[in-house]
Image (cartoon, rainbow, N blue to C red; front, side, top):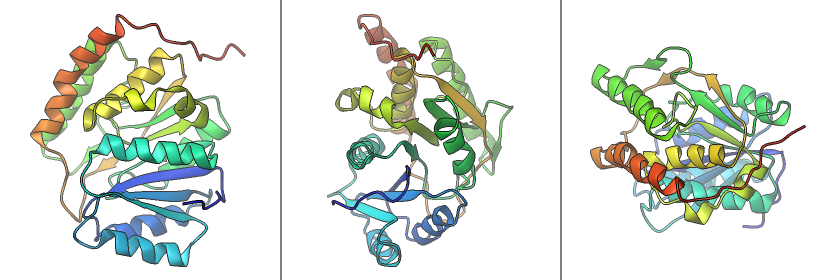
Length: 253
């Protein structure tokens, strides 16, 4: 894939069996007042998701890209693949988001502004920075997610309220600096590890309040094993960090 970039911003959207949402989420991002290109990572969805994305590529060949993988290889590896492609193509702002409209595409504009026009290196669309802004989740899942983030913050010392957030934007220099091939976790703990590592490298992290809305179409990819990785993996993450020396990328200007 040698498609040249057409904007300074790229949205990476992993998809698996998202035929109900694929076309709509792409259209929503392309319609934003700020210009974003889109990279879809599809893990061989049997429902034809990739074919829908290919149709969008025909409509918008300069704006939409697709990487098709052989099977379900994990959320973390999907984003790492996307990050490497974004660096290769020279994007300045790279954002990860879900395909199911849990993340409002309109929030991309203000997240981009914090990086391109502001001084944030990492910007997080946070469900918990101003209370609990989650719609249509069962109460048990809300509590599990909220207190998991509290637990992660307590164990790691990471100064982030929504540590498992999957709506995250990066300045290119962050992804160029972080050891992407050393990121171990594949599920929700991937989100924690990326934020934790960026923090340890001295990058400036900012949280913006968003409203997270549970998916209407399609099925959730959350599982107990994925959540367990996030809860129990942080102890190992913190322990390992005690024996590492991190470079300092904090800006003094």
